[in-house]
Amino acid sequence: MKRIWKILLAVAVVAALALWVRSRWRAWFGNVPEVEFSTALAPGRITLTPGEDFLTQRTVSWRCGSDTACSSLELAHCADTAVIAATGCVVRSRAGSDAFYHACLTGLKPGESYSYRAITAGHASQWHSFSMPGRSGSRRFLYFGDVQDTIGGESRQWLSKLYERYHDADFWACAGDLVEAPVDKYWNYFFSTAHDVAATVPLVVATGNHDYIKSLYPTIDPRWTHTFSYPPNGAPTARGKSYFFDTPTMRFIVIDTNGISDVLTATGTHTWLERTLADAGSRWKVVMMHHPIHSVRRGRNNVVIRNIVRPLLERYGAHLVLQGHEHGYMRSSGRNDGLPVYVVSFMSPKAYPSREPEEGLKIIAGRRTYQVIDFDNISLTYRAFALDDDSLLDSLTIKR
Image (cartoon, rainbow, N blue to C red; front, side):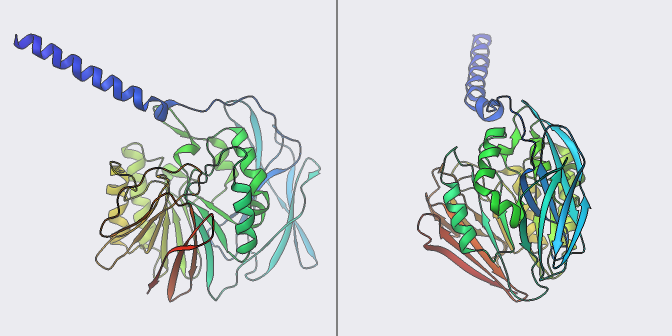
């Protein structure tokens, strides 16, 4: 009889495990199919990103054709025009090949304006312009959580609105899942809506789970790391996906939480993050990552991220932590002094149920938001606005 009960128990456990795996199969392995595509023989998907020194460095990236060709960037400043050589490589995805290029711009002058165009095999893009921030004064950037728009969605509308209203922002930051899926049609849609923004405002983006190809060992869509060319100062196990840059009063740190999948990547991220926070000095320490420390949705708990990242954020005095992933709005605090301030937000048309508000957690269910952060060497002011009507939903000021 005991043997029969053991067999029945084993069968029940196996059946329950099978049902659980089946319920999670799409989330773990359900990649969106990608149809075969070709790439235009003219520079496109032009993207401006910051270098490690935000006041003097930028990188311009673009896509053109499926094979590499002689490429350069023309940079105009005042009456002078310089030609900067571009580096190219072929990126092979599931249904096609793209040639991506990037040109590094160094020695730029704070407070000055520049114009540029990308050239590949004699094909030139239109001219784009950007301005470098000055060395002193207050600064501003925009932050938003998951964009993850559907084809033909509303992102064109709100991107245009924000671009017009906050033309003075130093950069835009997104906490991951910029596109719905890592396939060419979603990349095309994003850049059809964000073309002017991407080419003229530095984009600071974290990797999201929708940027990864699902498998037993998920890998980043190679188009992501070649579209967004970031400083190579991240963890050795996450070059180009984790990184930081500095202004005179702030160190902005981006963590690839999706890539923490084993002991090696966890150890590499922990070591790098500890050093990067410790070396930030007296600057504001702003950290951005996809998976939140405190979950908006009841029953979720990002245990690995919480145990690897949170102790370092609180030990080394991070001030503000920007997160996405869970398609809700929540603000919470860390130590007894209320720091770090942890924020989760989203812009996607997909909203998920939020947990009930409780002490220490400000939750705004179902509201898509964008955030405006202003800072100088004394204070940092955070404001969250509703995407639909621009009403102020949340705000706070952190003093040194």
